Structure formats: C-alpha cells, structure tokens
Length: 77
Image: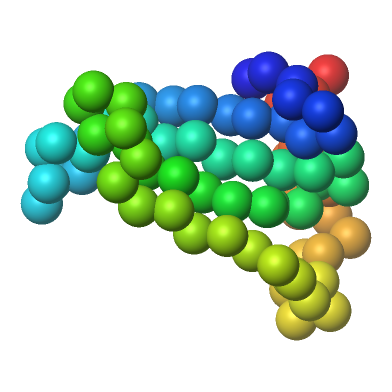
C-alpha cells in the first residue's frame, strides 16, 4: 500500500485463469475508504482494464457500518 495525495493505492498480484497476460491489480481508495478505481495491469504493467467509480451509495450496502470501514482501517493501521 502507498499513499498518493488523499488516496491509498493497493497493488496485488492476480491470477485470472482466462487471461494469463493480466498479472496485477491496482485498487485506489480515498481517505473515507471508498473505492475510486480498479485497474488491471498486464505483465508489462500497462493498464489493460480500468473501472472508475464516481459515486457509491453506501445505503445500498447491507453492512456499511461494520464491514467496509473496519476492513480498510485494519489494513491501514
């Protein structure tokens, strides 16, 4: 994990069985622990897929007060 401006960036190695060229995944969350984007990178670390989240309605998430903030807080501590 690294901090970039007001965001946290998590990079991990992935293993997509249907496409072995996709090797890494980068997830960006903001200071409020909300996902901003997910980028899947190829073996040479160039972006292959990017999903950007403009707005997430946490009222639709059934465990909004327990799972999401606690999960990210544990990672960031």
